[in-house]
Structures are given as structure tokens and as C-alpha cells.
Amino acid sequence: MATTNILITGANGQLGHEMRNVLADDQRFNAIFTDVAGDDITLLDITDEEAVERMVADNKIAIIVNCAAYTAVDAAEDNEPLAARLNGYGVGILARVAKRHDARMVHISTDYVFDGNGCVPYTEDMPTNPQSAYGRTKLDGELLLQDILGDDAIILRTAWLYSPYGKNFVKTMLALGKDKPALKVVFDQVGSPTCARDLAHAIVTVMSADEWHGGIYHYSNEGVISWYDFTKAIHRLAGITTCDVQPCHSNEFPAKAHRPAYSVLDKTKFKSTFGVTVPYWLDSLQDTLVELGISGKSNRT
Image (cartoon, rainbow, N blue to C red; front, side, top):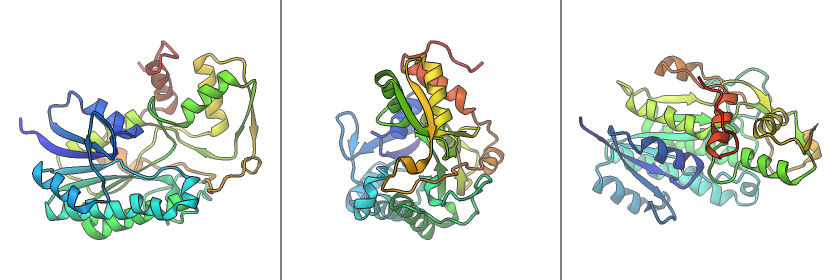
């Protein structure tokens, strides 16, 4: 069986780590994992076009999966040029190199390209209207990619990503729940948590389909929940009973970046195109806690 050479950028991030796990024993792909630093991966700066060109040409890359991004949402308000370099300019470089070498490209984007003022799940064709530097730069990356590769590019928008790796909401709430007697968590922002392992499997599904289905897709776990309810579930499953979690409004915790109040993504297009069932958020959360050694039982059958 022939293998497909693929390039994974941002391999030290949450999704990059899960791509490494998911592809570890997959004989269909020969993956090169890259980031700007790290001892066990290949170094690559996606804003260095000559370096990207050499990487793709020397390794005969057929698919580029871009997991690299500037994701510090509040910091991006003060560092928009840096966020734009990684989330926009770098995406353009990857796309140009992919085009020169007839390679395909999968790019990960975000719910922040929407303004969050809706009340029904966002479909891929709904108008974008980012309200933060992070959202603007991620949308710039989408537009650059589409301008260069057209409808052949695959853009996967996701939301509320978490994993056992790096910094994320689940790990933060676990730590705070153990250290604090009480917490206030916003209840007026709702969305769908996304387990990075599930998103990694979704990317593999896209790459291994019988034919290439270019376009924009939405992917998150099934279900809708607020940050408050998510925290309550994290603590309940982890057996944390000493922290009193109370709901609060977003304006009680002012932040530099505007957060979407409604971040629910409609996954109908992804599910129908690729014929998959998307896991429920609670089951995936339980699996992550099992992986972290916090809970010993999975909800999945």
C-alpha cells in the first residue's frame, strides 16, 4: 500500500500533539511533524518561505496540515502584527508552496471569525464578522488560502479546543477546582467543547477519503453548553467537591478581546460529506480525564 507524505505544522500545540498520537500507527501516511521549537520534531518556521519550500520539495509532500497559529486571544489585541504574521501571512506562504508543488492543504480555523451574536448554529456560508484581533487574523488566513488554492483548500473551523496537552480551559478548571474554595464562571457564553483528539481523527478522515472534498467545514463535538455548565461537568467527573462554582456574566470579567456569546457550529456538512458520527462532548471530556489519570471510567460504549 502506497503511503502519502504529509507535513504537519504546529506539532507542539494541542492539536499537533494529538495528530502525532493519531498518526503514530497509521501506515497510510508518512508524517513529518514540525514546529518552531522542540527536541523531538523537525524545526520549521511557516513564515520562512524558503524553508517551507525546501521542506515540501525535499520530502515530496502531498498534503500540508496547518495546525500552527497564534492563539493567545487577549495577547493578540496588543500584538496583532505578530498574530497576523502567523495566522495570515504564514498561511499564505504554505498555500503558495502547496500550489507550486500540487499539494493539498488542510487548515484549522476558528469560531472567532463570527461575531457570536447569532442564536442558531453557524453554517459555513453564514457571513463572517470577527470582533477580535485573533478572529480578524484567522479570517485573513482563510481568505488568503482560498485566494491562492481556491475551492481545493479544506478549512476546518473549530471551537473550545482542549486536550491533555498545553494550557486549556479543562486543565485550568481542574487546577482551580483543587486550589480554590469558590469560582465564578461565565454562563452567558455558549458553545460546543472540542476534544483535540476527535478533531485529529476528523482531519485523518478528511485526508483518507476516497476523493478530495475541498471547501469550508465546521467541526466540534456534539452538544451545546455554557462555560459555567462545562466547569460543573469537569468538576463532577473529576470528583472535585470542595469548590463552589457559581455563574456570572461576562462583564464581571472584562477582557481585552471580545468573546463570542454564541459559538455553536453546525456540523451537518462535515457529517454528510464524510459519513461520520461526531462524539458527544461529555463522552470526550470523560475520555480526556481518563487520559489525565483523573477518572478511571469512560462514558463511551
